[in-house]
Length: 216
Image (cartoon, rainbow, N blue to C red; front, side, top):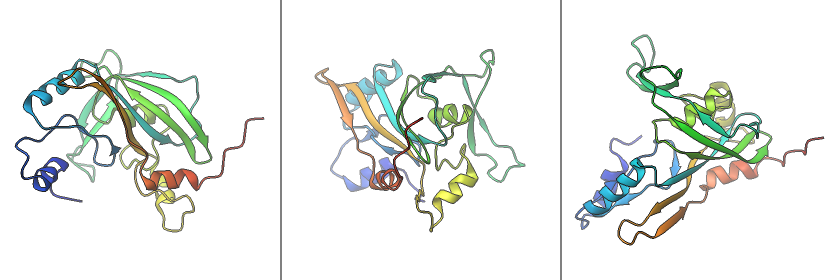
């Protein structure tokens, strides 16, 4: 709902900083870790690490339904496109899974691990090996298990129920959080691990749910 991005806000908040640039991006609806470089040399080093896949990015996502534990690797090409003029969101960017022989398909690999089965869905640890636009959202939805609260690729009727004011298990945002990031320090080369806890509204959504019953 703001007319400027996070980097503009950071620059306004820190006028003494000579250099501030985003190393990578998160979707507007995604919370969690976002790296910012304070030197041009650090920016180049970190962006090279992302491009050469030397970093490790793991997200927490809750999806609709019971994700099958056997489904651990999603290797599906993705293609970006714009919605046409017949759609209400004409001109908006979207992403879809395409066939392996599609000339416009970008190789995309997502690793999935079940963290917890809950009544309203499954909490997943999702590690991306490629950084495509909307990669996690589209890959999970393509298997029939969209992320709860996703307003582009999700179950819109379920999202509406979860967001309603009287919903016992209320969820008013997308359940996708950049939880863990591994990378090499741009100066020392030391391998670092950053962790960001789930924000309160997502933690509350989980705690509001009764424990899942064990399988018979």
